[in-house]
Every structure is written in C-alpha cells, then in structure tokens.
Length: 210
Figure 1 (cartoon, rainbow, N blue to C red):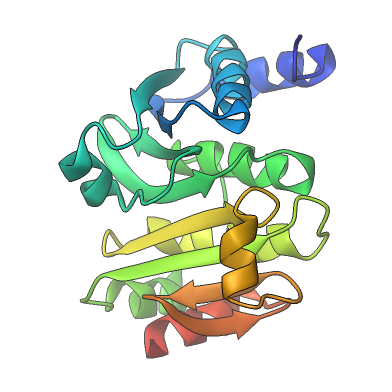
Figure 2 (cartoon, helix red, strand yellow):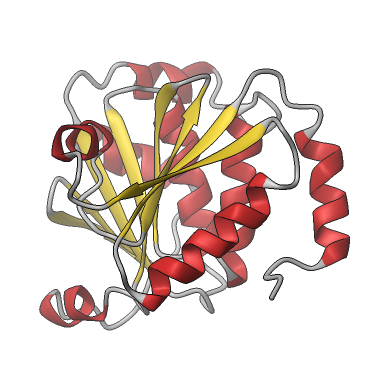
C-alpha cells in the first residue's frame, strides 16, 4: 500500500528533478514492523526521482559505519550528499508534521533551502568540537518541526554537528527513562539542552554554548 499521496509525489518530482548532484538515504533496519514500514516509505521516496536514492543496511552489521554517522538505533536513516555525510539523521519514520522536515532537509542539502548567513553562520562555523544533537518529538506536535528544521540548517553549517530526530512514539522506552513529559526536547552530547519551542537564533545560542 502506498504511503505517499499521488499529488505529493507529483509535487516532489518537480523539486527533486531540479537537484544538482545526488542525495542518498541510508537506512539501518532490524526485523521490526516499524523497520519494514520505514523501508517501504524510503522505497517510495526513492521511486520519485533518480536524484534521490535509497540504500538499505542491517542495523549492527557495520558498526564502524554506524559510528561515523552517529547511528545508535535501529529504525533509522541518515542523509548523504554526493556520498558525503550530512549530519542529518532520522530515527523513526518522518511522517505527520515531520514529513516537511524530511523534505526540507533533502532540498536544503541540494542547495534549494534556507541557509545560515552572516553572523549566524560564522558562529556555527566556529564550533570546533563534535556535537551530537538529539531531539525527541511527537509526529503530532505542531511546534517540533520548527526546531528540527532549524537544527538541520545549523548542522549543514558545520561538519562537527550531527542532528537526529527521534520519534518518541517509536522509542517509548527512552522517553520513559528520560522522563520526557513534553516535546520537543533537545539533548546535546547526552545532556538536556532545550525544552519546547525555540527560534533558530535561540538554538544557535544553545548550540554554540554547549
């Protein structure tokens, strides 16, 4: 059964066919039903355009590769641009309100989206240590996409930064262990750094001070 509406597919064809270079979605999956659903979703996206391609891997099979992409969970995927890691990861299936975050990440990597400029870019580029940013969301959350999209734009400005969306509906045990009561919640290198709605300027302040 198709997960993507035919009208959406036609719209995405127009965007994707204008991409210069190649975007690759590399998934790390287990045997769970959610992994199978993610596999189907990414196959459908792969079929939209030859400019956006999908590679499927088994979680835990190539630990070094997973480490290089900061992949620590099954049911996840990362985005590459022309074979180079982007630092943008998704844990779970980016549906609901996060579908736009996923599409904007692809277009952003292709140079077709929002970019940091001026002082904001300079501050992000000055970060000289690895930052692993993980944001817990709900796919029904209307405030989460703004945070996810801003962090994705920030990560595009510095290869030291990895930013990962984590669907709390899939990783319920983590949500319980961290006692997350509301989303979005941002962790940087394992430490809680932000809760709730934030502007890109606020997030740059948080990231540069981490």
